Image 1 (tube, rainbow, N blue to C red):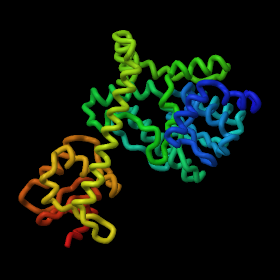
Image 2: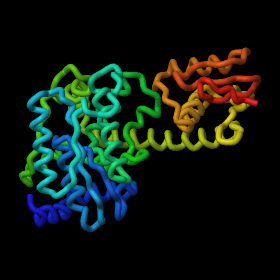
Image 3: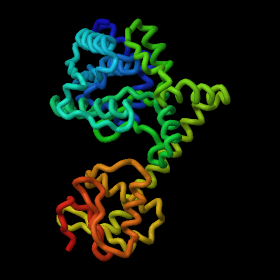
Image 4: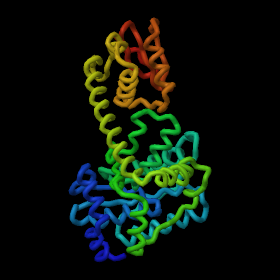
Length: 341
């Protein structure tokens, strides 16, 4: 597809629909520089063509990045070759790597899907640093949002988990969350834009694939209002989550005492809070201090039990971080540091 044809894509309804969503969430402002996560599948192919279509009028600097997970042998190599050819035709700088070539190998996190996700994020952030790009664009769409909701529901997620993916989180942007997979496929077929198909997306070994193949179709068959109602519910959950985030931040500011570059938590008012707010404050504090922690309810309950204990001392929460309690004061410290005064 030549540059003249690409330029005409921006007039199509689906492109305009994505632009409206992106502008509503300030995802793609003028003069942005963006790394595109590019697998070669239909979703990322559409994302690539969408951003190329609006590149000139928005003065965008684009980069495409492809990670070969090396799990599918010759098919994976063919995906990489396809991606390289497509971005060359669109004149977009291309970065690619094999997972075995990553400078730091991703830790195994319980599933191959999780390992792959971690590796992709590592690779994409590396490309972002090398290019100085402001954003990393991911091709998650409305169907992915539905699947993620039910996956997290099955796994016992909290409200924060159930709200799903947000359009803009840190450096990541998701411009396609307002459109569905079928819309993407119809667009690509109409314009004869090629894409790769990963057959592992249909294997029942993965929970996401089982949700996609059974739960979502059953809900659509049960009630034609499913997609509209799901979006309404998700919007309400997101509004509630946003409100609770504001309350959490305000409460933390009221009960945390700044000392130089760190905070000490006053446990007297903390212990009077509802358990839900206690947990949210701990999560907010850990994130603020950039302390790695597992997204598990049991981890938070262990912290609460330590806080409620009448004894002082230290509670390890990570190999490099600990909670240090002295009287009614609590601090997050490096494991070898005892800085409460």
